Length: 147
Length: 159
Image (tube, rainbow over all chains, first blue to last red; front, side, top):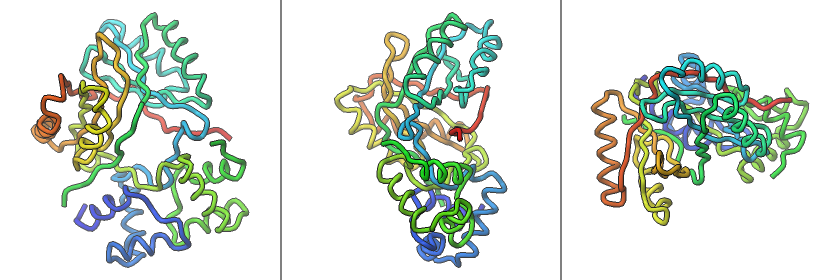
């Protein structure tokens, strides 16, 4: 990954124009030929340096809901509880973290009222209280790479 | 803001990403039997109403060499959380910054900021920079690292 790739990643985290030839417009900003921007973008997506490029949809705004939910799982029950939680299709990501609150998962539901019912069901099946941590405010999403 | 049938088709056609061709909105339009103008109008409207947060690249931090991805969490006064969150969010190494609810007594933290270091020392230094920025306004903080990915699937909407 060279300085041009980094400039592309930094620029494309900031948003993208809605016009007939948007890559051309961004390429001009970066002083690159459009074909080079496209081929570098293609290569970074193929390598997995970028996991995605396109519109980022907001589950809440599409009528659904998204929340971060947390469990404090006793060590000896960790595998069993992982299996229960992961079996829910509404659980999109689930991470173990080094804390007393050791299981952190994202719940995505098609309707907002389903969040509470999925949480209640996880509590019933695991016998553990779920700490619901929906975001209240979002200040920034993106990461600037140093040159 | 409810989405209409055309929005839904556009969402499904672009969930995996925007086409990497010179005229990407035209390419989506052809796929759906719409005009490029209609696709651009719907996308612009969805962006305005917040259905689309923005059209952007999502980097894979691990692939970029950032292996120490820490979730830093801070306990700050609720009345200052917006101001402090905006300050922390401006730091170049912070990728996500949110206010979330506390759960006392186990969880006193209301400000979350993800940091990304290439080494453990980098990540620790980033935490120190945030701590310095917040100063006495942060009553306490912790840094949580993920030790294992237990599940990872994309967010998808149905048809």
